[in-house]
Image (tube, helix red, strand yellow):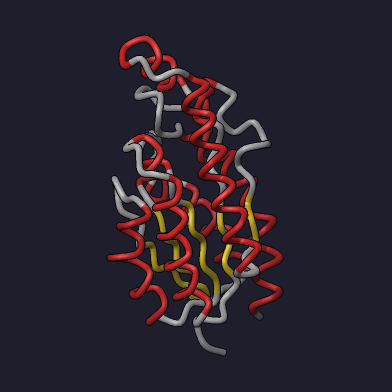
Length: 203
């Protein structure tokens, strides 16, 4: 049997920025994947600071060309804070999804946690005049786009919004934005059951 390639697309969370042990959700789930599928290999294309435009311009074609057996895509946090319009975000996601469709691989597409509950939101409210309500409304708009793309392209939606991932302060590192090691561990625990099911689909 040939290799089982897991391609990860996304931003700094995919490379573990903020974790004291340097492991984000990608490396944590790949460790489990390697035990379940010994022939598994990882193509981690995540880039710190990436937006949906970055994934479209620099990641998705590389992933598609490698013919992955499994793809994860968690993106939108940087679009959220950089005030990218939800319509632009959705357009980018649609273009990314269309290219991933051609791989035939299962795609796990993640929604955004409720970043209005993150420590960084308190700072934004008190120092930048950006209310938590405004942040939550933007998160909900982005997640609506993510959900619609997931349905349209038959991707598996991994819900990070309704599971309280942003509700515990110790899930964030000192910057109040990136996850801590505990936060990434919780993220990986949420993601892994979806990956297990996708392994069966892709086998």
